[in-house]
Image (tube, rainbow, N blue to C red; front, side, top):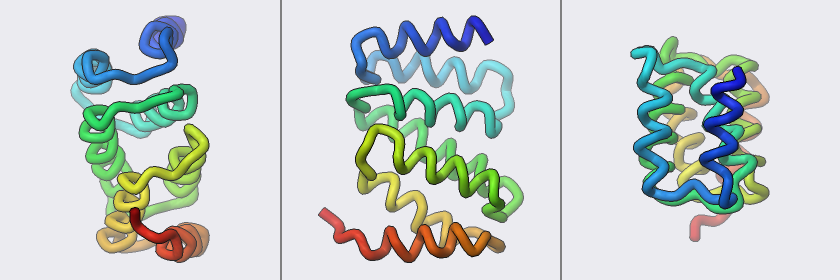
Amino acid sequence: MAQLKQLKSELLSDGKISSNEVARIRRYVEEDGALDFDDVAFLVELIGEADEVCPEFDELFLPLMRHVLLKDGKIDLEEQTILVDMLVAGGAIRQSEIKLVRDLQIEATETTPGFDKLCEALLAIPSS
């Protein structure tokens, strides 16, 4: 845990997740060979604490999140919670995040009523 806090501190020392840090983040999430919910939770924390996130981070994070959340084909309450945390992290909902949630809605075989309401709300947000 101390190692993870140190990594987060180093990555966010300037308040940004920059493209040159994405390779380091990738090594972290791939080091144990199993992408899991803890990896997603860590990345959501990074987004929440970063002032700025580069597009390369999204290229790593969003497919990872999709893979982990759809591992069993279902969006359950815990997964719904991490999605909401992602959406509110950083203070603004990014179009890439809206697209992820919409894709999850299409691909999930089972969802919670809360997830369905979240999707309805996101569909009401105009694309930019």
